[in-house]
Amino acid sequence: MTSATAEAADGPDVTFQPQPRPILLATAGRAALLLALVTLPACPAWAGEPEKLAEQMQRLETELQAQRDLIRQQQAQIDQQREEIGALKLSLELRDIRGAGLAQATTSQPQTRPLPNQPVGEGPQQPALAERAEIQAIPRDLGVLTPAGQLVFDPSVEYTRSSTSRLVFRGIELIPGIQIGLIEASDADRDTVSANAALRYGITSRLEVEASLPYIYRHDRVEVVQQRDEQIVRNIGLRGDGIGDAQLTVRYQLNKVRPLKPIWVASLRVKTDTGKGPFEIPFDEFGVATGLSTGSGFWGVEPGISFLLPSDPVVIYGGLSYFWHMERDIDRDIGDAHIGRVDPGDSLTANIGFGFALNPRFSYSLGYRHNYIFPTRSEIGDTVQHSPRLHVGQLNLGLSYRLTRTQAINLGFEFGVTEDAPDVSITLRSPIVLIR
Image 1 (cartoon, rainbow, N blue to C red):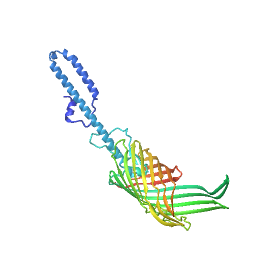
Image 2 (tube, rainbow, N blue to C red):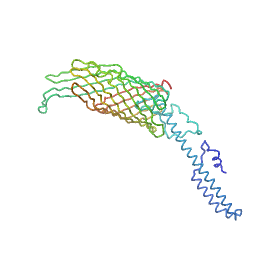
Image 3 (tube, rainbow, N blue to C red):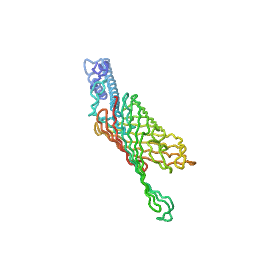
Image 4 (cartoon, helix red, strand yellow):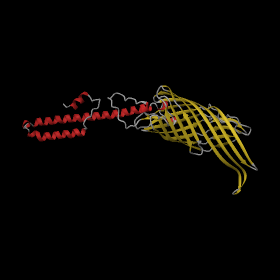
């Protein structure tokens, strides 16, 4: 029996020594059989013994078939082990993303690298931090989940700048250029600083919870110019600060990690009304606000789904969510108007983008987020009013630099591209792994 047959009896060689391709063995076997058919009848030892010739041919064909079966078996095992090693490598690479990344994170290695030259059954050795390319600049709510038993403290500071300019004419126009009535121009600049403290904990490898509480500081400056018999200029400055709306989020990974397959994550976020709402701030006798709110004043629930698609050296991400604002009865007089039941507009949010690792420590991301806000329904006195629909579109740029295995610095930018969007928003985050 040949060595290949002996290997088939003892089990496949786990070191995967090179084996001839089945087509080559088949060709060589047929050539040997053909040669035997040509030469053996002319050999005196085989003359008159066709039974022995047929037996020898049958034995050669049996051994050849055994070699084919062995090669197919080994090839199937190699393909299966390649897939398992690829899945294991991807799982290990994605394990540390949320633990130290800007969630506005995944790790990646070029898939062109050869497989580890190790016996089957031993896991591939983890590369050092300096050898691993990591993408940690993906938007915060779209990263891979926190590993089981890991606790992450995620502090952040966000600055938002928004400005609007409006020109309003209340009256009639007799002919072009001749107007009777009131012309009012306003210019408003709004600055908001939010310091947020968040904690994330991995309950299992596919389930995490997150709690966050912000502190809000706001400053608005409004300049109004009215043209009547003479020009009147008014400057209004408002300030407000305090605790914002606390939030609790649960995320669950729907599928297992597989090479070249997207990772789907479902989420559910609950927003409270711990902040001071817009109907809880003081107003003067004319119904003009004399303070600023630090929260929405309403509870909200946001279910959503997101995905991550690793495609070295890029990670593609995206998501879709729906935010439901719960209506409530305000029952308050503001100025000369009574405010009854208010139903804040719900919103539908979609985003798409990609992250790219330039080296093992630095990565960046680019993306787009669009938020469609439905009209708000308000009962004011005996009438029901609806606010206009809003489109908030923003371009996202994220930068991340990993300091250590447990800490990273992340900088995110959002640039408004629609009229209703803030001009710019800048976020600085530094997640720290407290418990590994």
